[in-house]
Image (cartoon, rainbow, N blue to C red; front, side, top):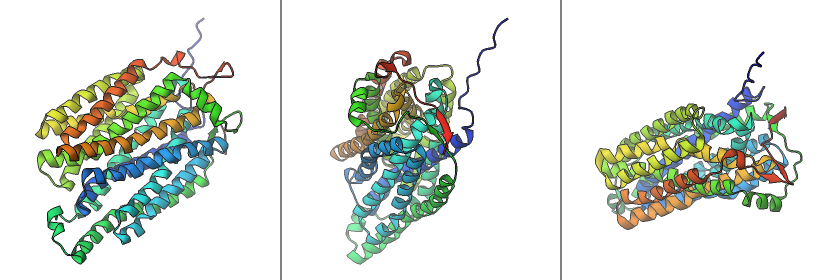
Length: 442
């Protein structure tokens, strides 16, 4: 008599409702991330800035990710994932509310401070939510589970671009830098005040909604991933992580991936404006098309991972993205724009796949290790600034896409050399560790 094969479930029993609730957070930081991407084009017009100057938006945003990820990991290690989520959501709310006083000052610097606080909250949310999702079921399906949760991130991204298109970009005064330069101080201040009020509105509205969500999460019982203890020994943990080549390579790849993603999306509107001679609002339609393709592709790749190894898909998409980036650089008009949109389809599986492959087998070091993969988001700040500098230096946004081209080649290299899951085992005290499953509710 043959024994029926054991069924493999994507989620651990009793975690469906918490999975849905945590997945909603992926939607929210997608909303915030892509509203921020559109601010580069907005502030370029409002403040008559260079591409390098506007890239400081991403420096403030993703710099906060770097600074807050490790403290967030320590927080959730000592307490719970739920604690981390509540603290992160609280900073998200505070940063969004700070857009109101920033709009009154007419100061670019104050907006950067507000974005830094907001992004600090998102850093804590991502540091908590990503490994939390991975822990909500069997380790072998962790990468696929994370891809499923991350599939809702681009839905938030699309919503963010829609909000920005309707309430921010469409409200910009179409006076260019030269025309603004001849206005007197009071006239320019009046124009900028109206535009910055438009920038502020959606963020404050989101903050008010998040207050309600914070209350729901606070009063909801959530499962936790069990650690044998909550003691934090950073020196020993970092030593073990540094001796895990698969993890180290994943951090490097994640740095370059986020640099590529933010660079591609931050300069999509500028590229479309250059190639198709459109204004910011009309050009954002093509940016939205990129996000729709990104969203659809993520669901497709989640299904494909049942049949094709994640690292194989990562290699193929990285090579394809590099080829499309060459078309963006050397092409023109609609051909370049369509290639640029196509890159988003390739990028859709990269973040969760690199993350899932990177923390596999880290066991009790997964929380601190996960923070390293979130700190790697600093690539979005540094490499976007480099891309903005290249654009200013050459006077051609298209040539600046050499930066994401390099990034995709690094990702392809990681996919090629990444260790097989069965030999990427992390060791502690001579024993193999696996990611701890979720247990009792809080």
